[in-house]
Image (cartoon, rainbow, N blue to C red; front, side, top):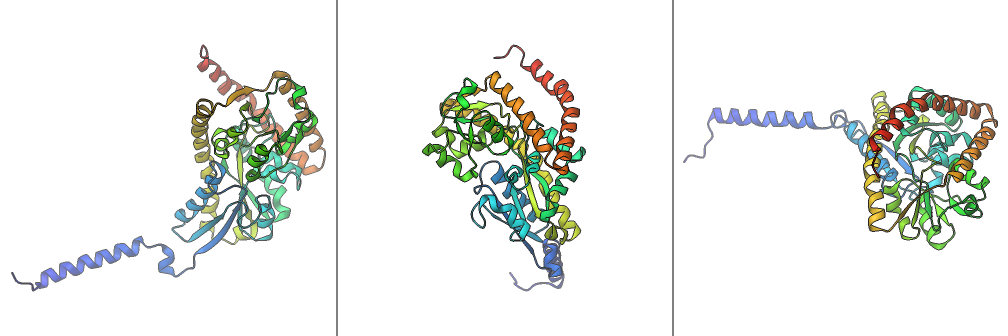
Length: 369
């Protein structure tokens, strides 16, 4: 058989090669054809690397930005302590050491007390209610105003859902059991506990387990069953309490250096913000699914004993919460306006939640153990 190629065959081969080359050019990222440099950012977080819940959310946001931008922008994640301390991420973004952080607003209560409203308030808004306040009730504008002096733009960036009430070495049967209790509980929940006789201890996430194991603390809260199980609390404390009165919502925040964010091309700026927004729904669904499974396995496989705060304890916690919120709201004009806006949202949304969700759950669960 001849090995020579006919003119028509050569033309067909050339057409195929040309089509393949065109396809590869179309598939290549835009930056390859324009010669534009890849924009590279640093994200610092308050979480251990790939911690179920907030840690995986942070990585998902980084991955989504690179994918949505077609490779024009990459965000490298630095877990807690890799670039800055876990509670140093706010200052790092403010100073421009990193362009973005993933964390939670209640960590900044010492810097600006009103920050706690943007994670959770004891006996406050549930996850969907909180998102509604931020997006529809004026919460975002107030959040922007609060962080503006630091050169930071905050946005919601993931949600771990309704939290649990905490892990305890001993049962809580009466208010007297809170006296002298050393508990890791950040935000306003810790202050409320302090007023009832407990001793709140401030610890970043990575230090909680060794503190509980060594007896430095007697109890701790963190997130929900999925994240808590990954932290290993069930190995040293067997009483797991509900409800999470102190954190009915689990909003994580992305902190952007405002100059860095505003310096992006408009399409990349939109991609970055939408990547965070998309994570609010994805992570909440993930947390709900995983929390349900983890709560079951904690009880069946790890011998964890599910308990509920006694009613007299909850009544006392509610009373102290009202006092704490009132005192904080009186501190300055902005804190007062944030509290008023949040309270207005709660007053509007709570009756609807009782009619739509609470009544439905009661009807659905009627007759079930």
